[in-house]
Image (cartoon, rainbow, N blue to C red; front, side):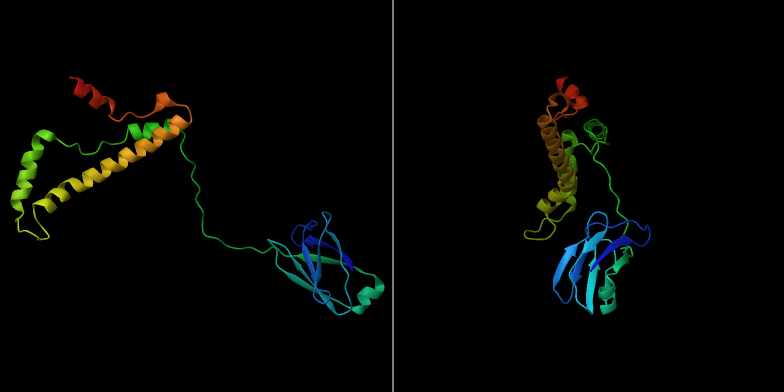
Length: 187
């Protein structure tokens, strides 16, 4: 049996369509011009399948084989609905550096007032040993959010600098201390 496979919506020939004979248990693939050749017997059925198209089964009759007919098979597009996919590109290093350098600063740790703040918070907490709330828990609660954010920012800065060094852009790395703090400590 020979024939041609095409798309039902555009009437364009389809290449690489899988064609399988049920009785012969053999298959073939359509050529770039959509034509195919396959051995088949009377009352055989051919399965046509291709990614992006619905499968189609065509019954081969004895009359078709005697007449030497060429069959034309049109395949319908198979649409699969997906949820929306949002793709965002990675910022270039200059934009990323600008975003990191100009981000709002974290709440700074003031060493002069830390003792009085800590003392006040510790005085408010009853200090029972082995209790859920105690001086150690109060100190942990006081420093936890700030310390976690500082560690995360330091980790991100380190990874960013490592990437810039790999790219050979050593002068664009972000320093450990921002410029305004470097000037403050020099005074």
